[in-house]
Length: 40
Picture 1 (tube, one colour):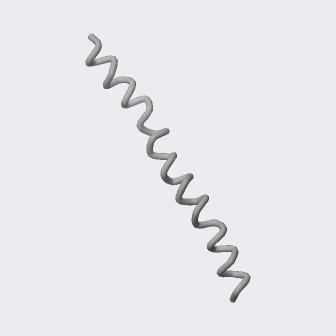
Picture 2 (cartoon, one colour; picture 1 turned 90 degrees about the horizontal axis):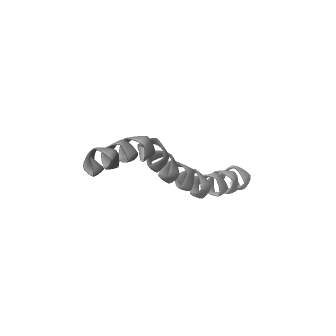
């Protein structure tokens, strides 16, 4: 019972866990992109 509920929790959280690295990556890329466009 606990095992199946654990997997349901993982399936429920997987979109959040996949969005977090994308958000962090975007936070890192956005300033670099603005600097690159300003320098160009």
